[in-house]
Image (cartoon, rainbow, N blue to C red; front, side, top):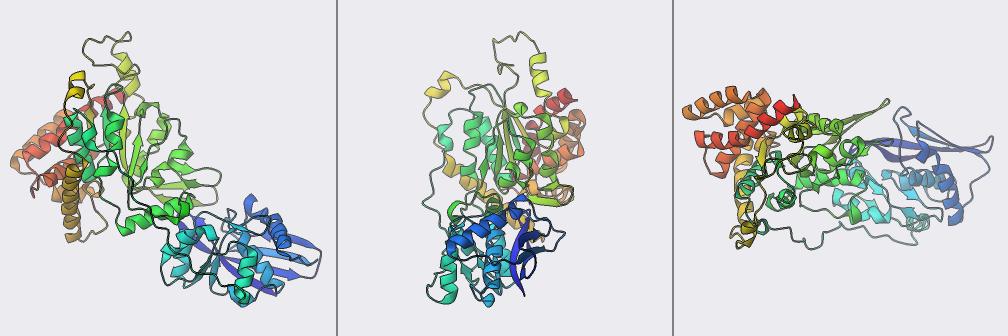
Length: 511
């Protein structure tokens, strides 16, 4: 007799169905797991054996074969423990076999028979609901699974004994409830930043259009302080965006307590981060920082200190909005539409261009440092701004009257204008100007006659690439949206081009 138990295998944030086929038959005593299983899955034999013994069950002295089908799909992770154990319990009549019918099962076992948390329960629950299945998962993951929908049957036992008692009718488990966030913590306010009015304006534009933004300035100028205040300017996640973010966090094992939040992600990895940490991958592929920043912000401080090949690996995700991690036997894709905010010193010593400062290395100090950034990478950044040092007189000024609340209101109005424009054109999935395609931005940001003349002259003098040309149009469209203007004019293009001038110099240095 063969017992069939449904579970899943993860490819990115997609949960693919897997059948766990358990057979207990006469023959040489043994316990085999087949079906392209990794080390964690094959080690499930010992965890399952010990958990069943702790529960009061002994494996029969027979040949036990567990097949994970389809056999050509790689199986990774410890979440196969629970379906294997429940299949064995059904095979030896410890629980009714029909108790597992129409249920997707995943969970890791401890040696004492308790069921411990695993990653990816939310995508598994959504996939199970789409197939018309219920879900059996660890108690710790119950609040996470409950977000999949109110009509899905969810059992979240804490141990094998509790599940066995439930299916026998001696104990009833209640359905878990979704994990609700606690009161939102306060975000840093923009009014804390004194001076840097130009940088605040650029930050507002970046927030309104979801544009990539690079700040270049000496140490202590307030670049990191400005970046930390960007999340407070951004509108909350839409329900669809919130679910996408939660699924990525679930696969990464970062969804503690099943608590979902509408606050946009803000990821700030250290400059020593490896390629796998930033982009994703590894021996067992996991989402990297750019996937965890999906629908949010990726802040890279001390930008030239990152390994050049790591930064260049961001070029394709910045354009495509997703990252593909390829391995010899499979390919995984994670969504990664993030807003890049970066900060850097102008040179190694950090004081190039300051009045009265003379670097011992001369102009090479700045050029060598900035040359660590490749031209194609710099070309993908929409706004470039030199952030000067803050003087003592700036710090003595009273706090600005305008803070995060006022700027966030303008950002929300501009984003609402963009979303309505794209929806009217049959593109409800496009929400900001930064996400618009080249042909679309040429249509919605077509400048007037004076603006077209300015753009043509600037494109020739600044040697704008096709990508740079379209990014200038996107920024100009956002500036017009902040002003409530339907038409992109000369003044909007002039401001957009001013944020592009430094990029031209940096691209020539990188050449």
